[in-house]
Length: 168
Length: 330
Image 1 (tube, helix red, strand yellow):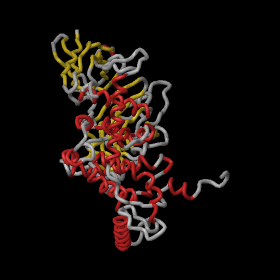
Image 2: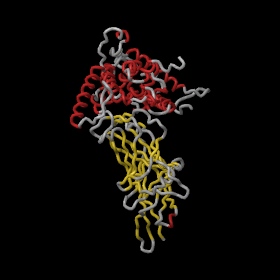
Image 3: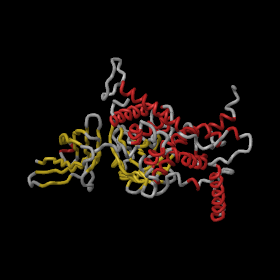
Image 4: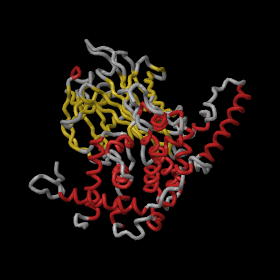
């Protein structure tokens, strides 16, 4: 409505005053990213830890710096990294318990993804698995969209090198 | 642009890349489909009735209670001069374990290079042994020191956006870049140290830009501080080192005299890097991407600062190479 400014619902989605409404649209993405980082079994714990951190730090969020999702994803990454450092065996656990790797014929592909350099794996996880678009990934990774596309291209080339071009 | 590793069809499409892209999309979709539903953190249907406790609200409430207790305690011990947090919300103290603080970071690498009129100084920030990771949300704060004293050099930021939250961990260090132009500054300082502070007082100090001065017509230009950028220690900059010693050799008595002032530069055609030669620094070390570099030296101690062309040296990734530049004295 012209002249009315943002509605209360819109405002609460843009600012963490109403924390519940603010994070709810992003929970699925945060959960998928956490699952990529630590495996599905620990994803809920990581998301919960991240939300606690986000709630504590919500006063430091500045909407002028960008959308909340990259901020929340960064906190999930931090929590996930901490958990991984505490549980060095997470990769094996994921391989045994994950929703795909236990039954999926793409085990080689999954292993190859995990062997990618950090930035390439992050781009692949966020694009192909978390299902973010390139612009959002660029915000999360702190780089230009073109850099994300280049990183994805490099990652695909590296995956082809690892598992071969004849991967059908 | 096509991938040189893969075949392209006549239209220039990279078929192998497209095939991998499609496979990843399929794999990603299957992975999402097989992923269990997230825990019922928020169920819109329950909002009208009795709401179940949200998992984050329990610890959040506990945190708020702790914050309240800490706040009261601080008020009692400090005479009530604490800044109160938002009503019902946390004070700042319980959150400080997230933000990088004193002792959390070290500068693991430093790079100095000249590019056109700019001199760029970069430092890679990495957590110390006792810190797994921490957060930075603002631009780094930078002070230039001249023999321990803060020099009067103002700083400016590259744009208004510090780039959002940066999580600095061992697997994801961050790099801060400082850009100075031209001729460093007109302040005429000997910038031996740069002090960089991020977060809640995480401070590192690195070797500075060196001696600064002005050419005629130069004017004071503040130091530009770029936002923190993430780097990965699994993708270290592929660099090699050159340890360059410069001496003057020969003359009537055949002596070898160390060169203690001047500049040395390396250039590979697309990038030029330089370093001041100090009185007691020993070999100058430059870290460079692999490749062939032309090395030149200029010192007032030799032929009134004439440029001596040493020739080309090859830099190999991961290796330090000793180079002895001998300026002939007749």
